[in-house]
Image (cartoon, rainbow, N blue to C red; front, side):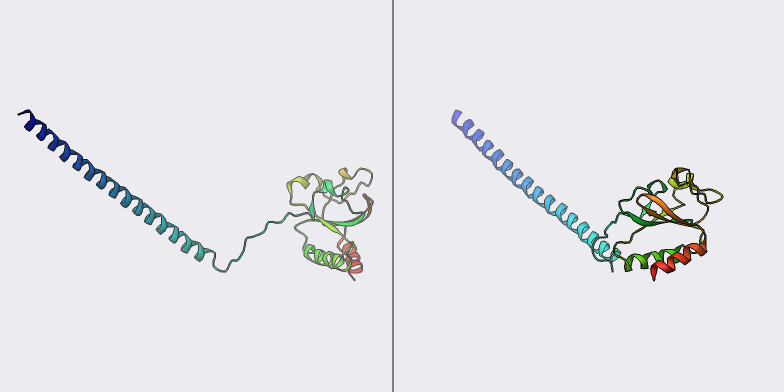
Length: 179
């Protein structure tokens, strides 16, 4: 009898082991299916992203390059440039001739390799303390100067050499130096 009971126990254990093996096989199969489904979903989203990105960037090639603006300075930097001789155009955005002045200055720089000019923008909040009703240039203490409209300054050896504050003066000088 003991032998029969032991045989029944052994048979039950064998059946349990085969059920565990089947369950482990089913779990492995489920895991593989789950990994495949997640991978397919990931690839689908990746493909959609590529298609949408191509449509948005159609016609654009390359990476946009950022540039640092060295030619536009603050009023407080006018006298501390490294060049010995240069012009500074202090622009009032309301002046209609600013683009003409810049075109002449660009021609001047193109024709003369050593020539240099800088611009100052009235619209910048850091320059607001230098805006006044009339243009007054204090050559002894430049930081007390005030500018009412577009002004062209020539700086030599970190000192103000000449100031052109009317349209006629600026235009006449720029025509001469750009020729």
